Every structure is written in structure tokens, then in C-alpha cells.
Amino acid sequence: MTDETKSQESQNTADTSVASVPENVIVHSFHSDRLDVDVKTAPKCRVTLHIKAKPDLLKDAKQDAVKQVSKEVSIPGFRKGKAPASLIETKYPGAINKSWDSSFADIAFKESQTLTHVPVLNNNSKISYQVTSLKDTDGEILFQFEREPEVPAIDYAILSLKEGKPTEVTEENINNTINGIQMFYAKWNQITDRGVSDADFVVLDIDDMDQDPPVQAFSQMRFEMRDGKMSAWMRKAVLGKHLNETIETVSEPDENESEEVKKHFKVKKVKVHIKGIEEAILPPVDDEFCKRVGAPNVEALHVQLKNLLTKQGMETWQNSIRESISDQLLDKIKFEVPASMLEKESNYRLSQLFKQPDFLKRWKNEWSEQEREIRKAEVVEQAEHAIRLFYLCRTILSENKVEVSEDDLTPNYETLLEMMFADPNLVNYKNQTREQQAVEFSKYMMAKAQDFIIAKISSLKI
Image (cartoon, rainbow, N blue to C red; front, side, top):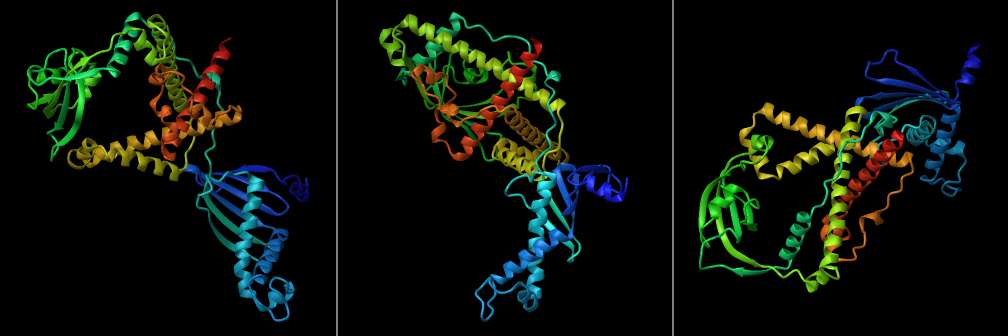
């Protein structure tokens, strides 16, 4: 095969070369009749395009430069932009050479993108370039930027579904829910002449005394005194106490908490202020009460609640399967994410943690430099996982043409009962900020992609 034949057959094709480059840099070469491009991809989605331009492209770039200069200069006897190109080149060689650089860069980048299809990260990405050679017969230029991640093809056969089923709805679940609705409509009798009893509700301010200065952890927060409804240490502290009393005590994990919770529970000195003692007067569960919440009678209320609780249980179970799918995706499908995106997401997550007084105090006063580095590494890992899941889900939705619509985030609720069981973020979606809406839409997109995967895995088992 002659060199000429090789050249013709290599037009608009790509080959791979790793000669004279670091092991972690991948090089692909592309060729056309107007330019040759080496695409060097480094870790964290960093890309360098090394472009060697041929005479046709350089000629077009120079003509474009002359045209741009002609629009900016005035020559007697000619309107702007109408003077002969030869005259412009003679009178303004410096301006043309400067504009030639820019025109060369514009044309070379556009044509290299058409040839290589290397997607720039986003419209706001920084693209730097350096013209290393520019003549009528040949020119070279380097571009550097971040690309979109290269998401591998997903083999759904390597994923599996979590086993189990939703918890069945019992009559006790229904009655507890009805009691919660009664509480929504309760009238409150203020108690001033006795101490706190088991049947009461208390309104408390709670200060964290381990902070310097002390920080109010809860303000005017209502707690139910019934056993199991509030922390045992808190119940013990306020039982029998009177309105406006202040109690100093220590927060502790309940005995029935898991070993994991007990392990991570931080015992604190706290000060509890009793701001109110209240007795709840609940409305009777009759037809009038049922109609207020959207059911014609008591029997229908039980039926509707069973359906809603069943649906809620199904959604909770579906969420646990979705989380399992996400864990498997992160474990089995690896790819690089852009450095700037990882830095931005990590910094945002860390800034949110710094808004938590307890975390900030530990960061400043308790953790060593090594411990702080461990926390930062954990945040970076969480950020990297979030970015990879976003791109995986976006790719799944796009490749499989799964429709997503913002309308799904603003469902219609026909009864108060439906609103009570709805996601509060969706009930308020239209009133949220654009940033909050973007977060909710991302969660929705992820759920759609996860549900597609779940359906795909299920179909493979048939």
C-alpha cells in the first residue's frame, strides 16, 4: 500500500497511539483533507487537541481575517468592508496576522469538533488555546478543555433486584394514622396548675450547653409525652415538672436503639425550658370529621387510608430498591468525572456542612489535620458518587428515550388526605426557588432512570 493510498483511506478515521505519552493519557488520532488532530485525554476528563492544519483551512482562516479587518478600517474611496483584499493585506499586515490567529482558532476548533466529536463539558467551560505555528502552508494549534464524561455501556445483566416485599398495612397502622389526623384538628388546652403528666404535650426550648456559647437546638418545639413518642432522657427530665421550669440534664441514646446509633450518639449537656404544657382535645371520628378530610364516612375513611398507606409502603419499598440499584451502579460501573465539576460539588457539600454548628465546632476545635483530611476525602467521594449517578441516569434516559416532564412534579390532589400523604416538596414545588426546583427535578430524573433499570432487570428474568 502506497503512502498516498494510506492517506486517502485514513481520511475521517481514527486510530489509537500511546507512543511517547504517559500511561494515564490516551491518544486518538483523526484525519481529514483539511486537518490532522491528536486527541489526548488525561484523567478527570481533561483534553488536549493538537491540531495540524492544511493549506485549505489556513487559506479560509486568512480570508476570514482579512474580511474582519476590512470591516474595522476606513480606506478612502471604499465603504467599510468593500476594499479589495489585496489592498487590506498590504496596508494592515499586523492587524491581519492578529485576526488570523483568532480566525484560525475558531475554524480549527469547529472542524476538529465535527471530526472528533469530543463534547465540551458545558457552554461555560473554559477553552484555552495556543497557536504554535501559523503560515500559509501549515499551522499548528493546541486546545485544552474539559470534556463530558465517557459513560460506559450498561450491562443490565450484572445488576440484581433487592429481595423482599413491602410491609403489609394493619388496622393498627390505620388507627394510628387517624389519630395523627385528629391531632391536626386538635384544640389545645393550656395547663398552668399542675406538673407534666404522661398524657400531655410539652412545648420546649432546648439549649446545647456543650457549645461555647450555648446554641439553641430547639425553639418552641412540641413533644408528645406518651412513652415511645419522645426520647427517654427528655421524658424523664420534664415528667412532673411545671410551666416555666428549667432543667439541666444530659442527652443519651434510648436503651432500645441499635448498637450503630448508640456508637455514633454524642452525649451532650443540655438545658430544657418548659414553655408550655398542653392537653390535646381531639375531634370525634364521625362522618363530619371524615368529610373534612375528603371521605364520605368512617368506613370509606378506613378504605382510603388503607389504599394510601399501601401506596406509601410500595413507594418506600421502591425507594429501597432504587438505592440498591444506585449502590450497584457505583460499584460496577466506573468512569472519570470532570475535575472542575468535582471541585465545585465538593466545595458546595463542605460549605453546607460548615453551616452545622456541631460540625463546624469539631472541625475547628476537635479534629486533627489528619481527621479533617479524612472528612474532606469522604465529602469528595460523596460528590464523585453524586456526579457519576447523575451522568449514568441522564445517559439511561437519553439512550432509551424515557420521557421526563416537569408536569409530573406538580400532581393534582383531590382530597386533603392525598395532600397529607404527598411529598411536601412536590406540594410546594411551584413556590420553590429555581435552585430548589432543580434539586427536585434531578431527584425525579434519577428515580425515572432507576425505575427503568428495575423494569429492565425484571424483564431479563422472564
